[in-house]
Length: 291
Image (cartoon, rainbow, N blue to C red; front, top):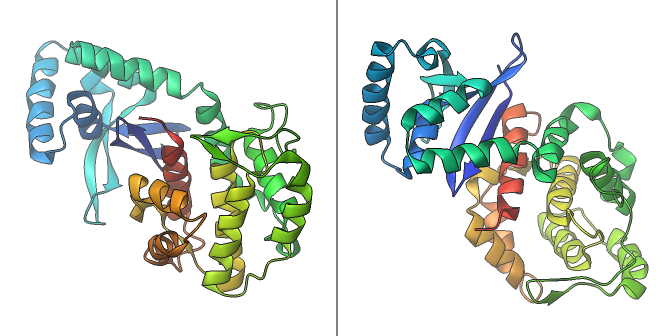
């Protein structure tokens, strides 16, 4: 059970683990309880679930019979056995909590799986097994296009295609369409032998914003591919706070010091670790969620 995933609900983590034998995700009940009640105190969530579990047992609820125990990584980095429930069981659990917040959570849970983000993230999870980008293409525009086409193929009709329209986001004007291809050629030729050079290249690609949508998610994977090839390392994105990352990226257009500091502090040599990769995808998509 080495496929680990994290969903983010109102900045609360809902951890999940993939069961190869049953071909399904199992979700942490304590995380669901915490997300529904917007409660960060682990002990209070434990007590709430203990009370609810006893109540449901008396009612002979199928929720309890649908739970099992699996090991999940805690905030201290260690793995502990915790109660988990299947995707189908999440709906019954939410209904058992019987308040409006639980229904709002359930609406999010069911909807998030079927959005473009939810569907593309499932495809992104399989990138580690795809060997999509050949070694000679790492760091090229072609590689970035391949990544974008892979995770957004069938979801956007422009998947993998360089945009031909000028775009803005949050008041920021990205590279004008008429200059984009020339700028991409310049970025592709930038050196990528040191940490600073790689991040500089990443920052410039972010400014270029080559696609109509999905730039951040694709480019962070592209960045990790370069790090792996050139430095034998990658980013543990779970160590980078969302607000700090977004602010650092906004500032990077004039000063890349902050983003370099964040990335440097999150580097790891666990480049073949599936859990690091899966968490990286989860956090990458989390950065794109609007509050």
